[in-house]
Length: 558
Ligand code: GLC
Ligand code: CA
Image (tube, rainbow, N blue to C red):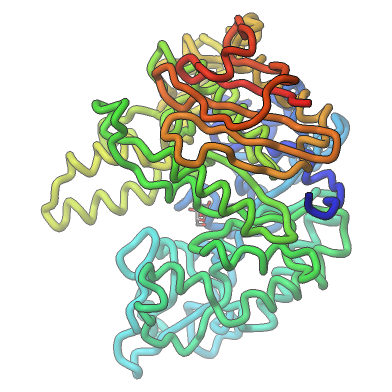
């Protein structure tokens, strides 16, 4: 047994991620807003979750839905005002919940006053807030972008290229400049002083750059983005940020761990290093997609064995730190469609089974709003349905090169970020109760069957199962803190693991397939007792060794 884990609210809490644009529209303009979130707080509270993470709510021209900020101290006009925000924070705290905001400081919007100034002239004091490559040095060294083929765009007035790892509307800030860091620590202080409970830090691994921009060593970094995540002063900056601002408040931090290897992770979350509390990696999206033998027609799938290995590696990789676990967010397709099965006969079992996984792994679960009712992928077939800059830019590029746009759209159906961004499904009225206007993105066609209102009435709904499971987790801190040991790594259909701490032993058995399956358990089950099952009739202990499709069992062992 490992040394006793230090208890913290952010380890025991469940994070509930709200995509503000799609949660609830209060004024009929088709865009979710802060008043809408306030209206949804009683619902969120009723789930039993503890921490709300909001995607960016700051002033933004919305090239990338708020991940392009034009003013860090104002609210996006579509979302409301600072007064609305203060009210929201007050209402969140009044319910005993915590509020975590998104911190997007690898880049700003090109419409941020800093960049508007910077691009005017090389002598402008704000020029040094960004990264530039002057024409005198000929064309800039190759740097690919996440959203565009090149991460450099030319700015005529300054006769130089500026760097943008994302779109050209998102120029990267120059963290090497101490004034920039000062500005960032100040704006963080502005929100902490208001009383927020933490930050989720966007693209945080990318902030430090070797400003000589040398050719990238492809042997060391076969995937170029991993080069981006290994900037020379990254850890110095995170430590400085922690000492200068974060550590002065009772708050949590979680970094988005783009392009990292397992071996890098501990350095961010080891408490002795005073950087971040948690980091989440891209494990779930890296679990290779392939056609699963049991779903030959889906054209998409993944290996359960790879998923287990990923969670196992991550559990170890954090070292003395604490894991963050998730299966989906606003950048991934819906977890039900990706890792479960959204066919009508299986969906509710699969959604509950995945909930069982996330709420019983070691680590803080990051739950994406809508997964608790089993929302599925958007099923868009036409480019016009999409809103995401990533999808649109790739589409235009493929069209420009004369490549197969149909094949591209078919892949997007499974992988696009918009799959997770459709409006939250409140009820079966017009537009799922999200808006009385025209939603900014199409509502899922299944909303009349899949929505909160009808699941409230059904004690066996995914929603009510989720609530019971959250309550169980809360009542059992030993399950939060216990060690994690996988039992059946090579079983391609079933995922079983133990969560152990002195005097407690939980066994979780999950059938990931639409077929009955046998668990491979080489442990003594004589004192076992089924505490949770996602089937109405749990059955006796014999169930443990022959599971129904997508069956999930949570068992206590003596
Ligand atoms: C992160 C965000 C994503 C955004 C990108 C650029 O990956 O989660 O939504 O597009 O950073 O800020
Ligand atoms: Ca609105």
